[in-house]
Amino acid sequence: MRTNPHRIRRLTTGTTLCLAAVLMVTALFVDPGTWGDDREVVSYQDNPALAQLQSALYHWGYLLMAVAVLGLAHFTRRRAVLAGHVVAGVAAIGWINLSALLLTDPVNWWFGERYAPEEAERLTNEVLEIPGVIFGFMVPGPFLALGGTVALFVILWRAGFVRVWVPLLFAAWVAGSFTVPYGPAAIPLWLAGTGVLAHLGLRILRMTDEAYAGHDAALPAAPAAPDTSVLARQA
Image (cartoon, rainbow, N blue to C red):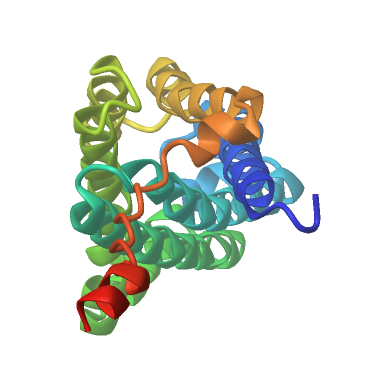
């Protein structure tokens, strides 16, 4: 395995997709905010240990997604090569940026422990409304990560690697994450979105190394060497 680059890349991509899906689903179910008050400054006080755990799980799930989307770019190496690699790079930057937003969770917890809910929310919003936070983290993270991954799945569909339901289902999760309040009602959407990731991860893990390598772009044929014997006779 150490000398087989196709196997290393295949296992890395498939494993990171599956692990990212598992970590995000686990974070969803252990998050006190899923089941409690929709104000995190309040719900995090119900179980501070689980509040910190869910934050770490989401953080590492998002970082693994940065690796996974770069690995998925391999399947665009025969069609839409440039678009696939550019979009995968943008999505990877977005997932890394999105993981940084998890630092707002301890801010919510810290203010919620020391102040009344209304004051805690006011102080949290003051932190999050700093222009550098808005334009450095709040805006690019979700849009680059989620929008970039949807675009990558569309490119993978056009490249023939996935069926059309993959980008459609993932796009439905992305749209739902902006419209459905985070809580029990959002669980089906999160299961659908992470299910897409797990499906792709398991599919890649089950591929043979030869099938994975088959997505490489065909190398151009080398020019034929001149027949020196003919040239010698002509001379």
